[in-house]
Length: 486
Image 1 (cartoon, rainbow, N blue to C red):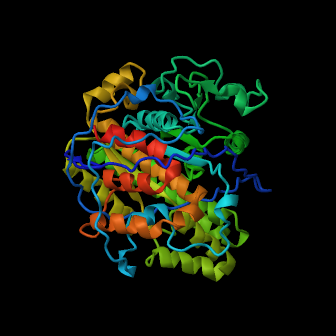
Image 2 (cartoon, rainbow, N blue to C red; image 1 turned 90 degrees about the vertical axis):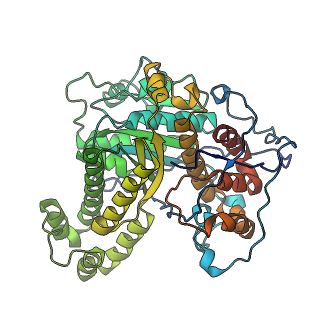
Image 3 (cartoon, one colour; image 1 turned 120 degrees about the vertical axis):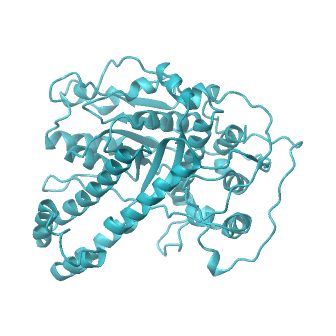
């Protein structure tokens, strides 16, 4: 689980009283290469942080149902915390170079770029694309994608949920939309002028949906030109978050849509077959990443062929260093770009329908396997426990974060949402956050130094620390704290 079933004592500091400014959406533009291949977006890898075991939490006072929540008016200040709840103060501890693997690594880069702009000129929109995929159907990908999108909208974010499981489009049902007036087919058939014309409003303020229609023959078999058209127009959408729901397959279209994302999430069940399928999916994603990179460089075409026929992987000395060596021999300049792609690659696992804390070991095993075989570090975003309330919510076309926000599954999802929002904020206001490094590190050090963190989702104490020191996030994190402490 993301945090102990026991509850933790906390009291975020009261709001500073200053108006909070919501970033204005602005699209991230990307054009296609001359050979028809789309350029890959710049990805950001969130390092797997270290943390300590979770501590007990006291019962918090009841709070309003988050299903009634709406994006906060930027002119209003963050909600105040009741003075009746005691504040747990962290002991000021010395900061040293060996404590760098801490919460600070979740929200700040290891080093500040010499070319990094001042906070006043940082791109405030900083749209994030999140892809939810996997190689097996029925593990809850669409349910999770819908809850992510709805949860972000309820926390005041502008969100577009795009259904790119074109062979089994149904994510709209998990979002409370029972029928679609326009779908991807209308856009691809040029019945509408813009992708904005197929945006379907939802019952949740700030959330729009792009749905699909799988009833048409061949709807999942997109021509290459139509895939490029979808990618280009998705990048042009103006929103805070774009959540993409993908099917359970390893087709070229599905893999390329998955690689489009800044943050890639693989949803897996806990049974052996599901775990094996998830590992296979990650491995195929890795190979597709290499194949695309090699194909874009004429000097590396032979390596692309070896990826496709599997001969490169069968090499005696196959390793990340071996791959780098082969690229260096053929094109030293391309090696620099390849290393950048590996450094920026960001993928996390979510285990769904877990039944005990022991199930977390399954994700940890997959983590080590991917590192050994694919040479990439992946995170464990969190776990979602098996809960009949989740199925009940799905049958009622209602996300669990709305139907039952206090259940354990909803709490865990909200801790994942905290990490996702914080990661976007780190890039939008990195210069501002750099000023709070020492304070955050001191308060987080006490929790972190005594153990190793296995989850990328934030703990209650970490969310509380960010709340205290990052005014821009207080409204969203107050709602998350209210939910997960209940």
